[in-house]
Image (cartoon, rainbow, N blue to C red; front, side, top):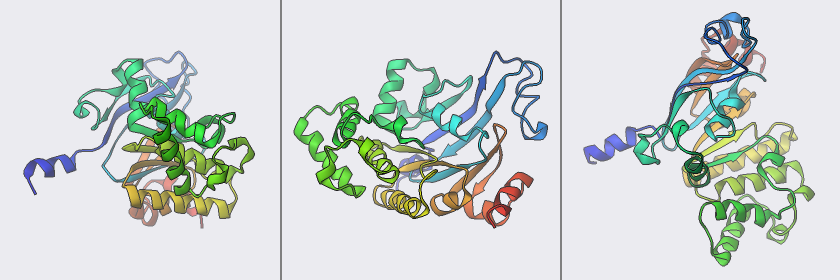
Length: 286
């Protein structure tokens, strides 16, 4: 193996540096006076909410990284910031497959951000109504993503939609049905197929099993693992459930009050948690 190839393989697909998202007017003390040590993410001086404060991590090609924490810990804000649904207050994000990972995605134009979303990323939201247009057919939802990624041949779009719906075990005779007529679990399957439509190097999963029956959760998790094994897609999985994180991920970040309090290999974090908050989360599973 050549040295250049070895160096390429070591490069993170995604680099996040000091990403912060503050809701409110914010002041110079917001990051200092909030966080796990203060037991609050609300600034006592200006009242702003620090949803994420100086978050930094790498994600490597083919890796599944988990982000876990209780409701309000900032994990969903983080993932929505990466997908440009939220505008971070500060920080840097680099994607190796965009301009050789040398350009901060948070500094590029809105037009380029749309290009990155449409060509290099996919997302599956907790609420399918955020990820799907319920008045479009299942095939139409997939077509929308493909059109945004510069697919214009109707026959090829239709063929791709059939491939994806088969992959997520949606009956092809329901391809032209509206997602609103589907169960929650089937809606998530359609959302996953839409997110995969453009063959994204990076897939973001935000609480995808929350609110589903246990048996349906297991089916969705099995589907995600199967997709990762088959396509080797790099994934970031957000969940409040350590059982989901343990089943899917290689490494884990634990968030509390908008900060990362612990990170490491998922097995190590699960078996030997160092931070009291991580210990509390894991003990609550037992």
